[in-house]
Length: 62
Image (cartoon, rainbow, N blue to C red):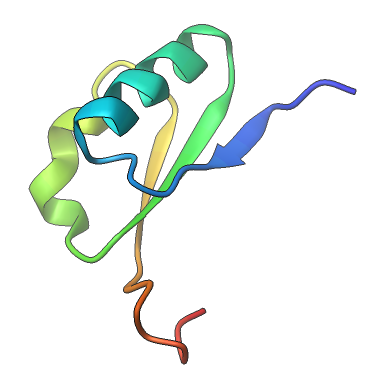
C-alpha cells in the first residue's frame, strides 16, 4: 500500500515546512490545518499542498 496523501499538524512551522517539502518531493500530497491560511502562502510554492482553515482547539470544527 502506497501513501499518497497526509494531514500534517504543525506543517506551517520550521520542522513541518521541511517535512512538507520532503513529502512533496516523494509525490505525496499534504494537507495542513491552520487558523490563518493566508499567512502561509509561501508553503504552497512548488508542491501539492492544501492549507485548510481550521482551529484545532475548537471541537465544533473537528
